[in-house]
Length: 349
Image (tube, rainbow, N blue to C red):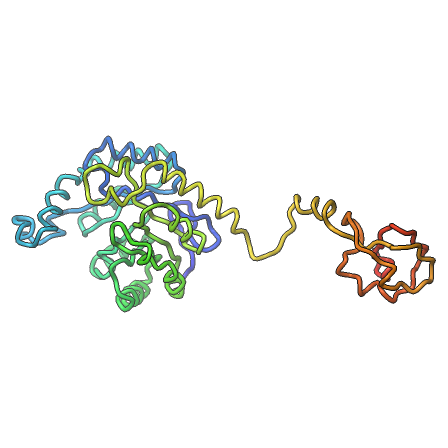
């Protein structure tokens, strides 16, 4: 499997800039106006992509659950009416996708069922995000994989054995995919985030990302520095808005700062090669040290340790070369307070 994939014109993988997904989810609360405002916020924050969610409730839930949510417990009493309320029409999704194009931000959408996949194909989405709840849904994964597009698969709520089985399944389909480390609690407690698991996920040989539901932006920024190729964060216009995801989402200012911090950290991470910057070159001369003659040394004199002192500036032979200088005959008259040069050690300049 490849350790990098491409979505649109963006390469995603080790060594590439972090691909930042602003997860709008259902935080638009069923309002096209709010959805467009969220796109504007995401574009202004500098994210690469904004992602929504698409459901066909008749395909997603059993008929008896839809007809009487109360029979399945308190969570469904709240969830089913809410999902009906916030689901946008297909025409509105068309407008959303167009607004994303106009703002220069990639449009993605999580399909929760097969009819939603079929609809998103009409929008020509460049990739598919698979929610944690569907990581074990091999039927849906196979249906998405048949579209031949990259898949971003979240691993929240799943055991390691389930993750391994899904990875083997997708590799068997020769699907192009990446895995997102995730804790699906809203909000996630810091002690439950477990960022070190990304290292283990990387062993599958596919790009690894992080889908964060924790409060604040520190953990997601650190995940990027630790090698997450993709960072996905829920965001909202206002955390006090009605809905299940708003309270655990970051607001516009937080989204902007998160992207800024990630790009700053990317610059600071650099490479594993030691380079001397232009600023350091100047400091090497003004603050660095050189080997200097402590007294006049006539030509032919064997140089002794007492004949050498270490002084600034750092234009001459490095103090690290002291042992290479001691015991050598002076090849010239060396005045006191003058710097030794490489030829004094028998080294051609």
